[in-house]
Length: 232
Image 1 (tube, one colour):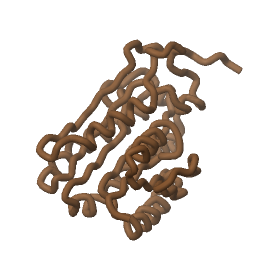
Image 2 (tube, one colour):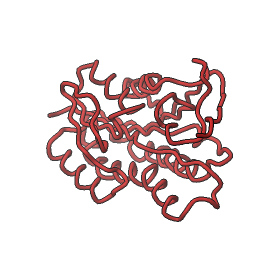
Image 3 (cartoon, one colour):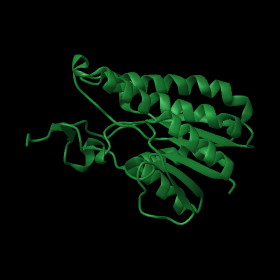
């Protein structure tokens, strides 16, 4: 299968919205996640724990041998928030590994394939936490700042190959990202983005003309309201 898009974390939330938008365009998609979402025609799920780098490397090799990848969208990630001194060494390692090291590994493996295409796109889903660090977000911000810096460097490395590298930095998005956290966006519609808003920003990067790179899109709800969840 040629001209296929690889999406990580494509079973739910932002990743699922991206997969559905690509599916609506009748584009072939292969997506990586631990569990599959609702089956879609021309969309292939590969069960992968992206925090397991050896497993990820194996599955990326399998994908490259079976699909002609022309776009890569690194979306998978998780959020852990709190005072730095309350994080265990393993928690810090896991967060940095999933949010930073895993997308860099995937990019490293697929860049030769992307550079060989007449036109390709490598897109990272960052965060507003990669623009400005906030209270209790030191570990998450460290990963997202790193991802943003890597994007800026790779843009220059890939320019001669017509491989467009960009990042979308969303603010609060109403997804299950917050299901395991003690806070969430405010309830009103203008206090959070929708997953489809981020997916549309990704398509804006993909649709950019060959001669012009849109390297960064910062996307925020009109109102920035965070509420604490009731304690159970």
